[in-house]
Image 1 (cartoon, rainbow, N blue to C red):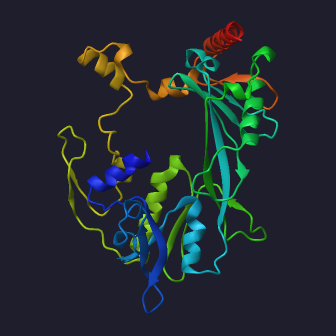
Image 2 (spheres, helix red, strand yellow; image 1 turned 90 degrees about the horizontal axis):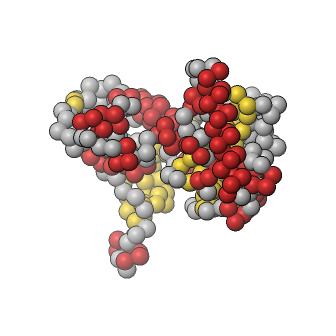
Image 3 (cartoon, rainbow, N blue to C red; image 1 turned 60 degrees about the vertical axis):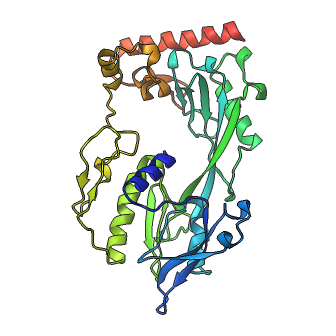
Length: 342
């Protein structure tokens, strides 16, 4: 997703560079942020001494959208700025696919500490998570063994005793950092966390968008750009943008209104829920030739189960008793598969 977003921006005319580090913010005589000092981290690897030196990028405005590194940029603007990010680590583990027969996924809300644990099929394997622990900001976070053990213990509670998981069942682990933010306007409780996102502008004009998550990134972008237009005195222009679909579709002309809700990222043009059926009918492709769909990866939500805090399971979606029966059948298939492979 991140690469697709960068490609989309580039195809529409943005200058996109990765492996470039901000080393300082630049300010004009009035103390307003007007650019940044940056460094190409790859130039030094090639022995390019000149290319690895810092250089300046001038701008009408600077937006700090650096996730868990938000505070580092904020303190370049003002060393006395109080941290606003409360970083939290989220670990995941990959387990054998036998835990999710028939693409069935499970959400468990009855964990030992009240957090939700999910067990979902993914590319023939099973992904389980997650954790939510306070952590330090680091460039390459890894899953801590205590987090892995927590996930294994919680998932094992959903299985027959003889099928309890061990570290030998773990095929891979990874971890990320959630950039939760403290609400600077909270009264009486400076530790209050903003569960969505926060857009702020410093006295020197640094615009910061912090918090949020992948599922709200377009709203974050819209709010940030709307604020940038206001604060930086920008004037949206009518610009003809090209077709980036690769399918010969028409481009479009910007009007000054936000387009994010109607603009697919590169690679998403032409997608619809009916696409698999259309490919099967028009192209004559069999089901074995189609990529796994989102519904198959996440499991059929109509037959998925949620285990509540009382230990009971409930089936969501339409169909009532029929869907509950399907869920029980899936659960029996899962238990049978685990018993036969234990």
